[in-house]
Amino acid sequence: MIDVEHWAEIRRLHFVVGLSIKEICRRTGRNRSTVRRAVRSEAPPAYRRPPVASKLDPYKEEVHRLLGAEPRMPATRIRELIVEAGYSGGRTILDDYLREVRPLFAPPPRTFQRTLYRPGEICQFDVWEPSRPIPVGHGQERRGFVVVGCLGYSRAGAGALIFSKRAEDILTAITRCLWRLGGLPGTLVWDREGALHAGGGRPTEPFAALCGRLRIGWRFCEPADPQAKGLVERLQGYMETSFEPGRSFANEIDFQDQLDSWFDTRANLRTHRALRCRPVDRLGEDLAQMAPLAGELPDLDVRIVLRVPPDPFVRIDTCDYSLDPRRVGQRVEVRVGQRQISAVVLGTGEIAAAHRRSYARHRTITDFEHRRPLRAGPPGRAEPEVEQRPLARYDALIPA
Image 1 (tube, rainbow, N blue to C red):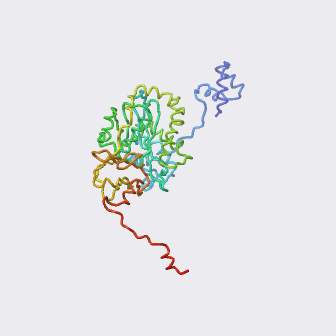
Image 2 (image 1 turned 180 degrees about the horizontal axis):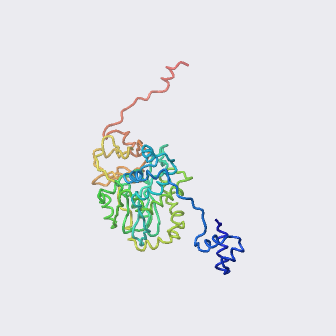
Image 3 (image 1 turned 120 degrees about the vertical axis):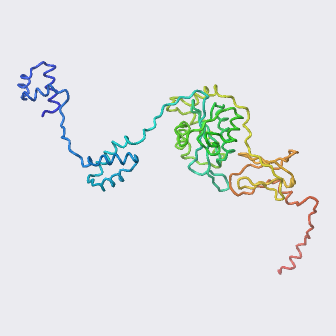
């Protein structure tokens, strides 16, 4: 048997130089049969081992049966079962064979197509959880969530920090993201978040009410289908590698300020790999097709109507906030915002409380102006007279 180099040389002499087989034999010293086979062979010579029966061959039908019943059955378990039937081969033979035939029994893989979005068409949303708790003051930290929005066409993003997944908090974060982006898209895309999805692809009443007020549509992804909102998923991955590492936060306000700055100076100004341009370069086209904002943010604060109790405090998220003690017995409306807790007297509109909201737990927050009426006691009752003794009496009682 000749090697590939000599095979190529024989064919060159015959087909290019035009030598006869007899002359080639004389020049190369090869016999006539070898030269003739080289001239007639279209493929280079190769060493081929004769097929040898594998120890796995008698058990391949059983392997096929096991895979047909359970395509994801582990190779270790398959080997245990065929060993009981008499298989004496090694693990490598079986692993190589399973790697080849398992895809034939598995369900067909899901394929994806590249989706293109029109300007102003959609904004994808998701809830991202930072890897570390957020400082909230008074030596405390709390688990936080960031509602992240990403426009489909420009890939411009925005985020808002919240501390619960209640509907009022998520909806407030949605509107803040939209106001940061600068317009209202045609559709909001969400997964089946419990506070927004009522089941069967239907929105909850608070979410439907917000979409109706903003005049935008909604779309819920199918269950366990994160690829349907891959734009915001990739933005969240970028936040995990670019925003979080190496940062520290004083409190929740500092976190939000740093997040806004990161979107403005980093995320929306980077060159996007898929777009080959910056999201801010496309944002103008998005905004041109989006509905304009309606001025101020929608009022989504929770309101609680109560009668001021003798102990004039109202509890919001484990914290007690003082109410004006002079309003005891009157009905007030307490407004719970993301940054402030306020209360007004129904009918007169007088302010009964105004506090900065605290996200630290189990605190009692009392306004300084509310302390004086508390010390004074009920109206009409005079302060008790307390005798003031001269200090000389105490000196007489204490021996020198």
